[in-house]
Length: 323
Image (cartoon, helix red, strand yellow):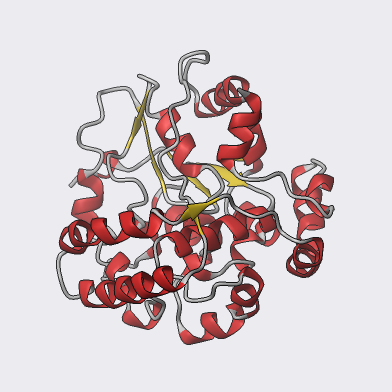
């Protein structure tokens, strides 16, 4: 298949930092073509199925069955692009995974990268809440889960479990800048997408070389509820994790369909997401402060708001505040 079908740009950054919202918004632009499969994860692979050694966390092996690792299948994602459109896809882990960075740039040397970043503690907390909502995160306490990160990484849990690591944007951006020119990388803050969406989408459109004033926001689809711990939750979550483990041996859509009633039952226990205690935020943030300074140096922007004792909250609450 022709390499003319390769993407012109990718949305990278971090999961739970607004990449889904940005993907959906850019897909409204007639001059852009976003792959119908979000997060194909092609450049996380080397042309082979992802190894089981990196799928040791709950649900990892099932999730890996959805990765697009065959080149023909990846190129087929862009076959529907109208002539003259700018093609793109969204896989946030491309920024975190250095091998993915190298594969991407080797395959598409002139690629443009939109790197979406978010307060790393807010992002990690949202990441943990997402996995809890899906019944996969066994730790009911966020800080305990963060403290377990190094052990989990060594055990081969997939990147979505790397709560602190995914937020080391400075080091990630530094390594990407060694492969691409500064003009090929656009650093976008999550708060800009939430607080000033029209202006932000225009800036991204300009970076991608398409008309401004065209793309528009759509309702977020990737916002998971906070689910409080309870005996009922723990029972449903154990069943969910067992089902996800068995789902690793079935086509992905089979477990997706089967898990819907379980996920709906889990979400029935939704509750307001509690604010992080100051001492918890400080412990999670402390090792990340040097990396934030590196990000400031590389981007020329201040991220002082990330260094304080109060985060900026989740997407739903901030969007409601703007209404």
